[in-house]
Image (cartoon, rainbow, N blue to C red):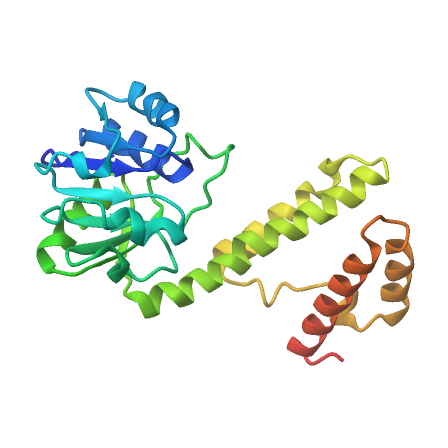
Length: 263
């Protein structure tokens, strides 16, 4: 992890992204000056993990002697939170879909292309791509330092870039994970171990890291095997969410077939 000249950062929020970023920044020598969270107890817990970090009860009371404030709250709360920050302080968020301008005049974005959940709470941010954008070159230099500090890989990501990359990320992570969760549900409801899927999951990861996912598509949909698809649809009827699952199965099968011109 790269060490940089000390930066002073304050944080709004104490959720998964805030915890991950605070831990990584603190380990690299960045001073987390103050934390505000709507639920004070969560801010207290996070501050206890850091060195000399103060918890404040009002955003308006933030110390202005900082390089920036990270606004790490839900997208629909970004604008209202930013309005309370003392106007002289630069501020940035970590959203992939929200324009940086909602934060006010001196604004920026540091968006990590990473899923934050309970399992990944203590993951290193080293090597993670970060989309960076800022309202000024001076502020962009600060945001570049923040990403460098946690070992991330920064790339220029104005709104039009982040929108498209975020859409791709939703398919790659959110939708793919949902499909894996459905497959695990089918196995568990049928009395089988989810270990049976490990080799398939490893193959998916291989295609994702080499950029060959389209070419490695296999299965009954790409083969146009209507008999097997009908058998699957019959099996789906035994599950509690059978109607939604049948529609989802049919839609995905149709899309695979049409994408590969096998329909």
